[in-house]
Length: 484
Image (tube, rainbow, N blue to C red; front, top):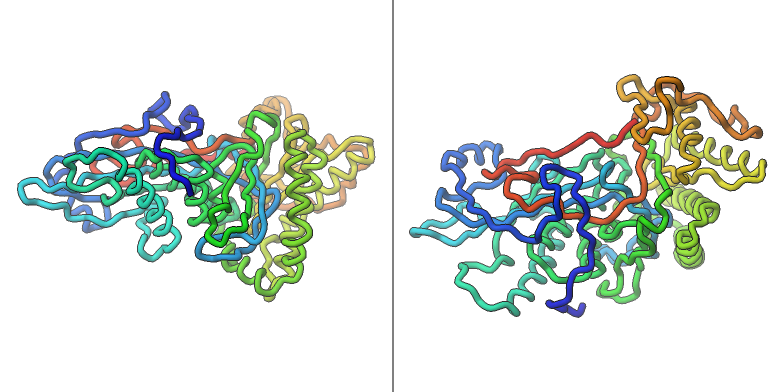
């Protein structure tokens, strides 16, 4: 990697989604930090994330968020487990952070002693969704932090020396992160989580590197995390170098290039899946002959066709490729020994009704109305142009009525709820209504209606305005997702 310290970072600083900072945040912030001495007892009880001596320190803090991405050409399999180098390239759609995001606050403390004192807590700490995570036991997390520190140290050598006791690259980090959606349930929580962590620390360190370079670091945390470094439509180019230097995320198109493409996420289960993605893809690489055919013959051509469909806003081609790739991915899972079952009966019924919707639409001379895709879990993501979303919502709400505890609220105003009852079908004439039974309430626990979104964003750099209080206590900024 060629490091260019004077080259600007090419990234949009977007309007924040969290209060209270309404303006674009600067990249750094210094603020005096004077914790109470009695926090030592709270720290020992696990109530506080970080404790320092009572002398005044200068701390630096920033809070950022990163989006979920959902692949339409799937990544499944590694050729190098340590560097997380994929067996094939992949392509994804970044979703709107208003609905799905990971938020991370990173704080850097000055450990310089005063009057002979030194800080008590010198190791990094990470808190995820309010629970402390052992960094030393997570090699992927450790690798990301190591790479970020290595870059920071490189640029520090090029800066004038200061009287600071330790350079920033050698100081402890306090990190708090949370998701506003179910973790480990097929909604790409590791992707947005690692993207948020890497992006936030890069901003804390003020690293002058391109986003493609940053995606290589995020990749070492979670492969699909590299795609969450960009907004819009993103490819993860697998590369060929053994050191991973050419395995990176690349922007295919911006959100604004196809602004009317929307997504409906059907949360079938928010429980942790039985077979993790890491374990599942290892098994497929070792045992699935279909995966080898997919790697060599199928994916390269699909990547070309998908990029073309996106650039031309050709939804028929986009839909056909998306559904075919999802089905082949799950066929690979079934071809694995022992077979992996990520879909359940509700998932298969969703496939059936979307396929029938498209078949009936084509019979009337129209094109595809919607496209489903499933990652490693039972939850469906259904893409559709805005003009088709009302019909899609009616279809899903008819066959999969929501529980009374989480009713349809229509935040994007597709219905006049005072006069209409969503779920009343207005489908193509040739639609086979018997394609699926009407499931009991709660078979889909929640709908999340979202759209194509932008990449990571700086939310604020005000001490105590992120996921940490001024005194270092972990807090929550979580807002409900845009559920129906």
